[in-house]
Length: 198
Image (cartoon, rainbow, N blue to C red):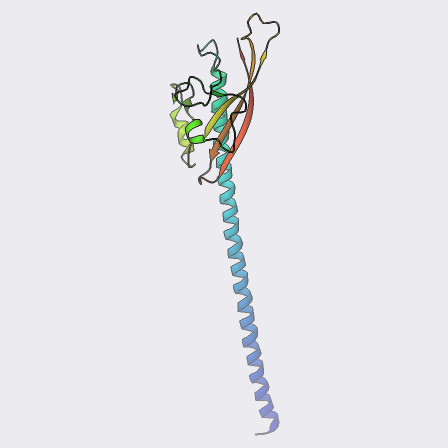
């Protein structure tokens, strides 16, 4: 064997070792790309789930606010239900009214379990409203609990030319709370409502 043949064999062996190392490096890069894509997909799924949960909580809260506002709008002489006067201390199912005094609602200490009215209830007697469409309750099967609302009287603006002082516009704040599928996903919204009582 001559020197040229031996050096050619050594060079070939070195080249095969370089190909192996390059192949391994490419395999490592492909694995890292696959892991990055997998982590990105998992993150996107979590983001979408959180957005869906927040959207459910907001829609549930909005339904609670609309229920409280529609109950207030339904009161009046035509229904035989007078203006609801604020509760003396706290509004519960046994209280004669469902409206809180201005400033009694404190979001840091408020107990929604005992003092909030549930969507689908009539606040005057805490019973289900007779003309309530039960099929709409099923839309809240995807949330952890049905929305609740609180009614707070802000102030009464008496008509200056009114014969009776009971005539005027009452301004209410409707505070509603709703949850998503997870209990920790919570939304609270406030709505101001003006209602004229004759």
